[in-house]
Image (cartoon, rainbow, N blue to C red; front, side):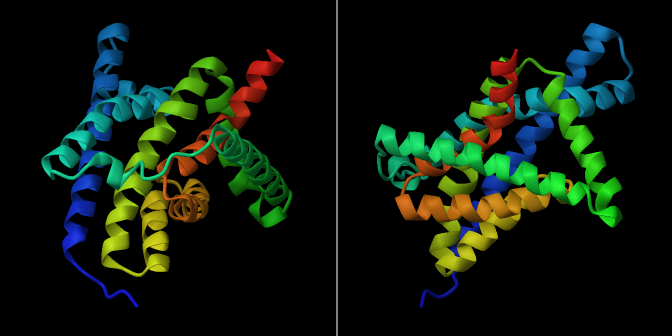
Length: 237
């Protein structure tokens, strides 16, 4: 059995520090842009960013964060391919995993729908569902497919599975590494319901990354999961 080690944990902390710092920077850029274009106060610009600009904040943080992660790996003098893109997958495998992600999203939506019908949980889950509907229906689905369906999942998978999970796997048993990276993935989604969603999904994505020895597997599923609702809206429109 693999013993626990401390050294790789330093890199996990560094990666998450970069992730958090970049998100704050992206949020600050969006707030400043809102203040400049709308003449809003800082507090009002923060409210606008929190309510309507979340996809843009996340996508901007991805565009800033990915080059920084590449730089850290380069400075570590370790081949990026060994840390992240170990195995190449066939297009048929990627398509199957992408479709699985879409079906997984639909299954999660049905579970959420059923939970809303349970009296003690009705208000709690309906509030969450309404906030997600607002996010989905108030943006161009093509824009959201690009930002939330491609840019953000690629960034999160490179970070959480390709780098964080890889470091956890060096310092802990496999099962503990899968749970640890999923737990961090869930915590970073802030709200309770999204955190549970993300933790559960993170367990599956971590296992897929380990099973296929490639971050492309988890990227395909994550993209399918995030794209599902926006693809449906695009086709309907």
